Image 1: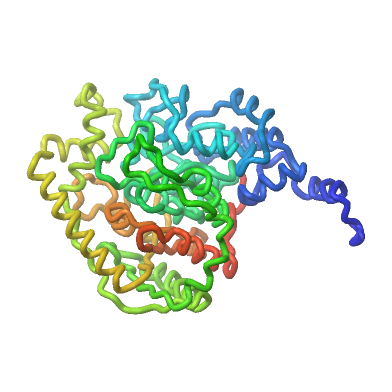
Image 2 (image 1 turned 45 degrees about the vertical axis):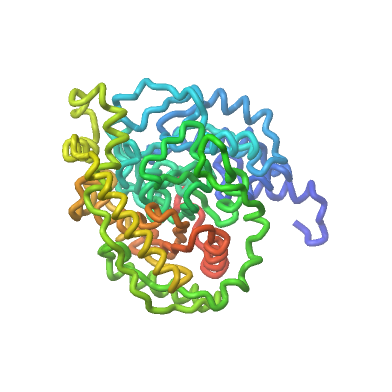
Length: 484
């Protein structure tokens, strides 16, 4: 191509040869929208490429596809919209009307959704994304390994045989594995940040209530947040631009905020002089020393390029104890009430164990205990964030473990569930503050990630920190040899 040639059509031809349309887009979602708008490729070509890659994939990232509906939507895609025409993976715990709504549980294998969640509605209607199918998740979102009786094990695109984490594991595998550029996620105890950390993606758990959980909002323990598994900071910002804002069916959802993507890069100055504390053992977790050595170096690098100051603050937290796990199982017990104990044999071992261990233990006393523990945790988090602007820890205690499980260790918790892993992510779910997982290099060829916790409503600053890392130490947007 000659340098003096700059006619748009020549560029389009040039790029066509550069990016073959028989494999899905390997850039981020925002660049794919640009490619659609510049006619470098079409929503139809991209959908076809995605469906072909999913068919050949050994990741087991999708549990359901809607190719006919997706083809119709691709043909009439409006690429002027923020995610216009982009193939979207939807976590199978999210509701899409008429699609399976299984909770990744055999008991509900034949159930269909009778509504669509507000987040999916906003990103498809206002955002223009094309929902193509459901990504695998852990049963009821209860553990951080995506392996169920219903769907089998989902694999980490960085290494077959390792887990992408959970509960948004299929979403993470699909995005990091080059099948789709973006997919929905949810985080009630780390379920966005844990898989993002294991697969080298950006994972923001926003302030509680940022994206409504309507139309069927069950508040439960007040810890669940919905969001996105994304390859880049700007994709994450754009997602929240499209999806955030109050819905009156979710009375705790927050008022709309605007322009997160537009503001990226404009808050660099406001990071200067901010304070951060390093807390590798956040929440009493035990983190791999080799991994922390690398993460600490990344954290110090981030502080030095942004002008943040690393300070020492006591970051010990009170334990949430068994009462929490007991109440977390209540919702699941209620859903399975008509099927228990007959269904015990078709549940994943963690869920079966969780129900057996907690059945009948929830009452006034457990409830009171939870509320006093919550109050104690809120007080401590308040004190820590009075002393520091950010708490920097890891997203996971180590690199990804085996795809089939078992979970690496269970420290006490009666759920038989999150063990050591959730301890790093759980404080932000309890307190409702935002926290972001940022890819921070590899160990033994597997991604590791820093997790940065901020005060309530500080997402723009967390995205700014992510942007500083992305620009200074860019990460691979997809795993090697993708689509895989």
